Length: 167
Image (cartoon, rainbow, N blue to C red):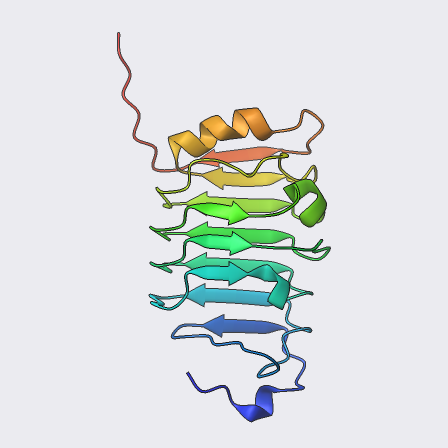
């Protein structure tokens, strides 16, 4: 994808990507970006680094078929909403520190139709989580181990869960 040089230095607040996003060096100033919605089959997107978007408040990743990892190295004080949906190869978060430290402002987390992800990162979820949506039984089981009793969780949605009950 060709990045329009006129985007450099603009004060984008929302970016919707439906084809391909390429960020390298100073090709695009992402610092003022508040909302990022990536929707589509991106062959080249296997690792998404949240660090590239320091003021991002909302991140939605949908149908990114080759996305495997979301990484973050430093504390991100702005991200409030994270939605990962229908990313069939998504396996894990790659964080050097607990999510509580890296995403202190995160209040809403959705991980649905991502069958490869089986557990939350060590160290527990952010304490400010209020709303969570999940659709994987192993991830829900991992939630029990990582959820701090002091969390603000108010709503837990469980979607498309195939469970067999035995008598």
